[in-house]
Length: 374
Image (tube, rainbow, N blue to C red):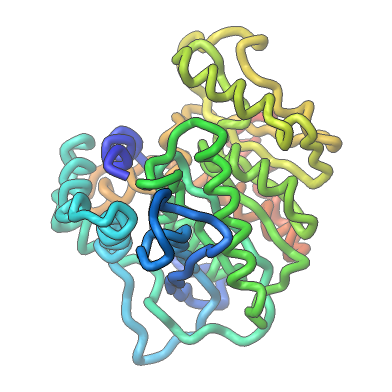
């Protein structure tokens, strides 16, 4: 998992905002974690079951609808980064993660030349640790993190979903021992299998409606999400946030080779998705190759995909940290992430809650010329 840190340092320019409560947000957002193991998978090879890393560790981060209480404890951004630090040590049986939360916060600020690490770490999120769950059954959103990422990369969006009546589980991007995610099919499937294991852990929950499941994947998580959607009969929709299932050839030969290994695998070859699919796509500057240089994932869909380009959006705008840093430093925020959040949330509301909000958001943003259909 040591290479996780290098990957994250290159993948941390995200954008995020802490929106005010709206009329449709009838809950507060609760946050909790569940630690478990998948005893059907060996994590650390050449070990025995007395080794705590013998079986596949499973850390499940959950944002959920909750009711307010005077005993509620606010969740700070340092708490989310602290999870990464703790887990890095746990998954590698080392102290490699010590001090990493502070290092990351410093890197964010230095990269953007805005705010300072103390303000970023002490940013109060809109979620409350172990808050009292609201009664009732709620649709489930499975969020698959980006390459070597965790759910904190999009925590604002996940909080908003919880406040609107969704239970959200984040599936971290952790590969085979010692935890580094690679672009090999074997590591990709570890994230997919972690999602399946998470569903098995949660199947006894009486507040989850397992007949209403939405899948959201960011970047590498979009590719993992497509495989997961093919495995889950209850999946109602799939949203890709600039996902890697549309692979752009020509950047790195090794990456192209790895993707060919994934696309030629038995599972991917036989894939055929019949659920609604929404892709929100970046609008990169310059020439990134012709149409033939991009893997056409639409061939795996039996229904017409909805692909929307977010004008002026970069790949990193589909995650959640640039505006966090800018907000704490009183710097000018970016708007692309807010648009991406509105589109994602309204689509889930329409497909899982039968709220006809997505069309209205599309019309509004099209009029503003912030998005365009592809």
